[in-house]
Image 1: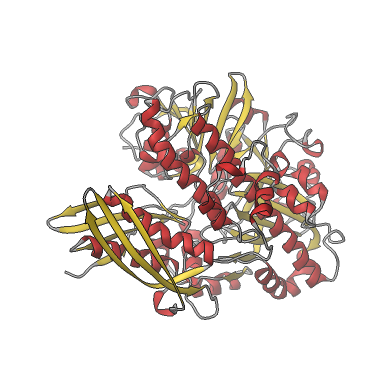
Image 2: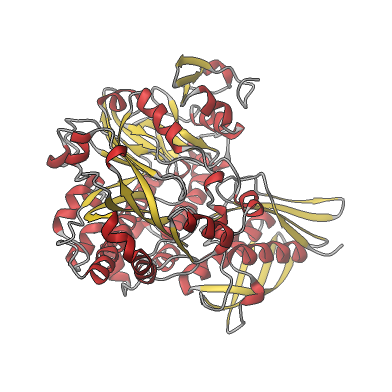
Length: 483
Length: 144
């Protein structure tokens, strides 16, 4: 067997593979997996099973897709993309992910490696102090229920109103850092209580804050890089990966229960309980969409408060304000989300789970500063191997509902990784290679070792060759904070 | 055989899976709770200055266990607590199962506790509570 499935997998191109509708009972559209042959060979059985399960969901259009960083997830695979007709299709928390609007943010600076290296230990200590991470950490923003209601409806805009950021930050976020249609009345008290004190916290798992350097020889598209504020002269940038924390998870859990019951009423059957869904325009579907938008907005706000703390930390260490240090936001983009977008088929509910929106040049959804070049796409690799800044293409809009990869994707379980290396040993090894790591949990650090992930460069090359994103720059880590 | 749990190597690449078992319903509930507590922090490093009494009632025993394990995740976020132990009783009343439990722990302290994963939730992926040759067993995947 060539791949980890008994199903027939047809080669469409060197980077696109298709499982026809004849391979599983109930498939309404073919499934398409992106990646080179070697990437597909390494994919777990779950990807093939799950992407074809998604292809059976009511109202799905064109293809059920999986990106090359795909692996097993809950219901949908991680890396999954699927679009459903607004009128006849469904919405599913399993297609969004538990961590609603988990996403990436990149902040540029005018600082160089030579300026930062002598103060790196101090900088990482200051960042570690100001950005709480790990189990049960709470943020510095004091919050009551009415304030949190405003966070849910205003997203990052609420933070700017409180002084946590600059007004121009908003235009460099997917949808301005605020999804419309958020209704706090559709969110349970349980979810609010879990989320209220977590604003400005990283969490744990694969979430991180990373100080990175962009070298001149690792810029692949100089004009686009310049448009994104990346000059590549050993330039320091900061990447943040986190989402809506316990709040988003509770929203997803609450509505999975609601949808399990609703499916019986609407006569929907699914191949996997974690694909529980409801018609998008049903009362349950609209309630979830309103609650999911609340969680997405809380995630934008979370990353905005963290950005404020990062600027404050840099200002404290380098004695110049964030503005003087040129700490502009490059972009903030979600990779766990469902949104209504317009395609030739009409209005579709596009689910991206571990997949990034990647709109090409000319899209009216992009801010004026990026409309001529395309949307920045931020892809996080493992903390040892580095990350990438990419740009969206028109081809993505045509082929993948404007979507691409989001990271490197795991190949080894957390339990296995912990058995392979101790956190303290990994921390020491990384220090010797010039990467300073601050971690709340040493076992959590071991779980995130580079060998537990795919080679991100191979994943990036495959989406470039497939034409759904283009490489702009590679970002090399020099400091990392983990929960 | 005593109640026990162990984490699994090859299930849930990005998350954390475990099997728990016991000779009775309260035993398997206790073993699964111990696994969730261990996933968050080393209970031996956590004190007992905080406690919370919880009650649940469900017709479906698996749902009852799901609610019980979710309590640990909820209080971890809502009150910033990690746990050292838990007490539990499970009884049957007609068609319903009733659970009364106490979660015991203390506020997160990075200086004194060995902290592990910030568990975001209990999932229903591969979730199955069943009796096998008189022994109660459950497989749980935690989203981290």
